[in-house]
Length: 212
Ligand SMILES: Nc1ncnc2c1ncn2[C@@H]1O[C@H](COP(=O)(O)OP(=O)(O)OP(=O)(O)O)[C@@H](O)[C@H]1O
Image (cartoon, rainbow, N blue to C red):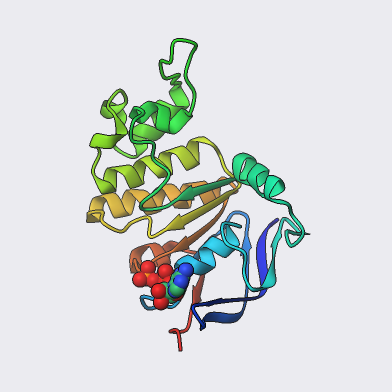
């Protein structure tokens, strides 16, 4: 089980961002995409997460080619199996911290929170912020909140773009511990990172060549 890509190529504005990339990422592993700024890590991660269609090549999820998946099928996969930890997206600012983990509220619009969600928030150091609006969190706190949600949902595939960027050393460590824990409980974790500490915790490191 896991995700693989065969012969992916993406061209933007007449430039080959990458050509002929093939990778395999297993369930239970952290796969780190590394390389210099601009080499295409985020673009590749977006292709693997089916957010971006490559110009050629195929992404295979749990042994099934996604080439012919409709947008509805892709959306179902995002909803049921995938979670994204992106620096500038995913957190709903106008909702409280607890809602951002559970995505559930009762009839009166009050966030539904359970022990599992509280436990996740404790893990990322946000348990005492549960009723605050996400808008007031710092960039690093939002990042940790995104990870708490991904772990709470027990997503089979976690795509994390620079999940430790803008965090201090202690929080970098706790985020990489959390991603490690997600992988150890069976998730296929794929991360684009410049963080040597996180790459060192990965089971597989894929170095992309600088764009030509
Ligand atoms: N839609 C687009 N149009 C034109 N160029 C694009 C587009 N999307 C990405 N690029 C270019 O593709 C290259 C790779 O971008 P990408 O964000 O994937 O790199 P990266 O390795 O993640 O960089 P960083 O480490 O700085 O985040 C960059 O030069 C970027 O400007």
